[in-house]
Amino acid sequence: MAVEKPLIAVVVPCYNEEEVLPISIPKILDILDRMAVKGLVARESFVLCCDDGSKDATWKVINGLHSADPRVKGLSLAHNRGHQNVLMAGLMTVRDLCDAAISIDADLQDDPEAMVEMVEKFNDGAEIVYGVRGDRSTDTRFKRLTARGFYSFQNAMGLETVYDHADYRLMSRRALELLSRYGERNLFLRGIVPQLGLTTAKVYYKRDARAAGESKYPFMKMLNFSIDGITSFTSKPIRLIFMTGLVFLLLDLLVGAWVLTAYFTGQAITGWSSLMLSVWFLGSLVLIAIGIVGEYIGKIFTEVKGRPLYAVKEEVGIGKTL
Ligand code: UDP
Ligand code: MG
Image 1 (cartoon, rainbow, N blue to C red):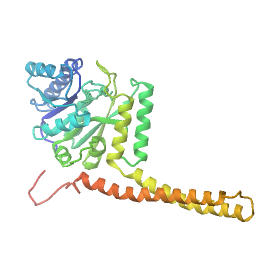
Image 2 (cartoon, rainbow, N blue to C red):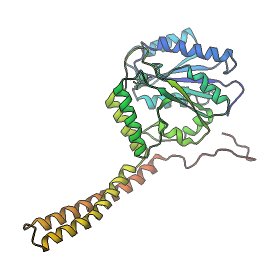
Image 3 (cartoon, rainbow, N blue to C red):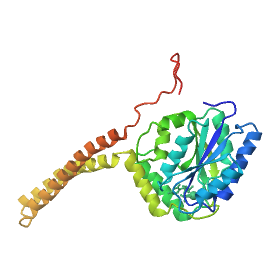
Image 4 (cartoon, rainbow, N blue to C red):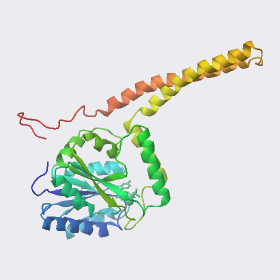
C-alpha cells in the first residue's frame, strides 16, 4: 500500500564483491538521499548488504561502509547459498522494517537511477515494479542470444516470467508478506513474483557493464539456473513425455498397417514385421508408462511445495489487514 513517504530498503546480494561495493553502495546512498530531498522516500531508507558467504573481504568492506554510514546494514550468510537464497534472506529480513524493498545486484549492471521511477510507480499504487532491461547492448552477443533463448525456452515449457527482467524489482511490504508464504526450497523468484497477483508496473533501463570484478554467472550457471527454473515451476516436461507416448501409439497404427501390408504382399524379409511391430508398440508403451509415473511425481512435486492456495486481495468489514 502506498504511504506518504515510504521507507525503502535496498537489498543487495554480494558474493565476492569487495571491489565493487565501495563504488556501488555510495551511489545507491546518493540516490536515496536525492529521493529523500525530493520527498519521495523517508530519510531512514537504508541499504542491506547481504554477504552470501564470500571468500574475499566483502564482509569487512560491508562493516566499513556501515561505520561510515549507519544506513548501510549488513547480513552475512554462513555459507554460499546462491543469489536466489541470499536475496530471499535479505527480503525476509527487511520485510517488517520497510514499506517497500528494492533488490539490486551489487555490480550495478542494472541502472540504479531506475530506482527513482520504481519508487514513483510505488507511490502511484503499484505493489510490484519490475526493472526491465530495455537495452542490452553492453552484454556480449553470446550472453544476449543465450539469455533470449532461455526466456523463450522457459515460456515454451510453461514457466511464465517477465521478459528481460531479472531480479531488479521493487516489492511492497504486502508483496513481501505474500512471498514469505512460499515455502519452497528451490527458489526461482522470477517465477514466483508474477504469481503473487498484485498491481504491477514496469520500469525500463539500460543494462550496463559490470562496475568492477567479473560475472558470477557464466554460461553453465545460467543453463543450470534455467533448468532449475523450469523444473521448480512446472511439470509440463513430464506431460510432454506422456503426450509423445500417445502420439507414438497413434503412429503405431499407421506403421502397423504399413508393416502388415508389406508382410501380406510378400515384400518383407523374415523377422522384420514382428520386430517392427514390437519396437513401435513397446516403445510407445514405455513412453506412456514413464509419462503416467511422471504424472504422479508431478502431483507430489506440487504438493510438497506447500505453496499457499490463494492470496486475499482485499477485504471489507473484516478488520484484518495484511
Ligand atoms: N551473487 C550471490 N551469490 C552467488 C553468486 C552471485 O549473491 O553465489 C550475487 C552477486 O554478488 C551479484 C548478483 O548476485 O550481486 C549477480 O551476480 P553477477 O553479477 O555475477 O551475475 P550476472 O550479472 O553476470 O548474471
Ligand atoms: Mg552482474
